[in-house]
Length: 542
Image 1 (cartoon, rainbow, N blue to C red):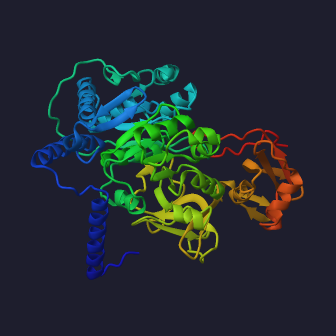
Image 2 (image 1 turned 45 degrees about the vertical axis):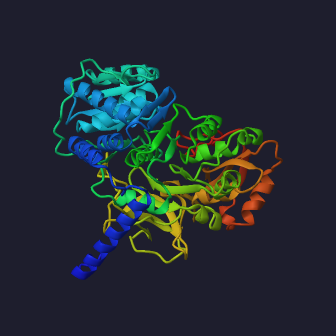
């Protein structure tokens, strides 16, 4: 708890101000502007408030002719992007879109996603991001659940739009364009440039949770009221104004969207590709001299698995930060990536609901494999028992987080009640003597075998370190004697020879006997969702 003594509060405020100014200056955000640029930046803030549209306006004021957005069809300067966003906002406003509307965006990573999101937010409309892997019926159900009044979609998702219209009976839909000519979204009406009074409060961005524990739910996030979230990230990662940033993770996902917002604030050149292809990523890194690359763990894995001749074909020496989030990053995978691409990997632990709770630097990943790092600035993490009491160092328990990035609410309620401002994450973990956090698994994934509690992620993490293992999942199987037993589903690496006895012996040498899988089955591949989270399904359930 923060002390109530006035001197303590004053000291904390001064310390916070110094940290904020120092960190922002280090990232290049405190550089003085020319008088003309200052006026244009002030007008951008007046027009859009502290929103992505203001970031576009400020970028245009400071770096008008420099590249702002690169997608599969070309490059837009800051001035072009700002003008296109304002044109689209004017057109949407002309047909009555504004505060009170909830507009869905079902697009891949391209200028249409970016421009529609920024334009709609400038009007005060809530923007709801739909997963591009949804089937048409699921998209229709989310449209109903989220009470959408409109949907911006790519051509390939026209069946989803039809299902959504059928489900609602009156949904307005607009096609996003992926060609280089014309507006990014086909909206009827003419462009009418005018100075708009900013809405009383900015529209919210609604990010859908992964649905790994049920149907996707909407987590609403408004524009942060302070610079704390930005300072927290910049304090841990060497990010700078005018970085070239390749956002490979899906923009509809909390991690990808967060990096888009960060890139806009830093006036970065943001590079996006409609579909992830590991070799195309390396080609883009070389072509654009990418300094910051954002991924999800399954993408990290695919970059590691590229053949050596393919990897050596491209110059990736410009990379300074490769940031991974969205799913569990095994320690062995992190080490392999850094062996190939350098010690530039950062692992961010968090969720749609909690934002980032811990960040692991390359040093953390080398010195403590499997860690997700330590909490960033003004973020606090505790490990608690079932009664909410803090447990001793190195003991396992529930992970709870207190930060400035907690969302306002999740449809259907949060995972659990917050205590003293700390929100449960739904994960189990421990904190070591150096303050580093280790995530051991989901509370919902716990397997009870013979009266012992086992979290499968711990066993998976160990098996994944075996040089003959490419992928692994540990699942529960009903057992008449023990209630449940552990089954390991293993994908061999290449033509490696690996037997059930070898896997079981490997686990027995490193973990308690009750954590040793009673059986091991070998598969050709395991399912992962769009952000790389392992889907623990067993094709041989019985």
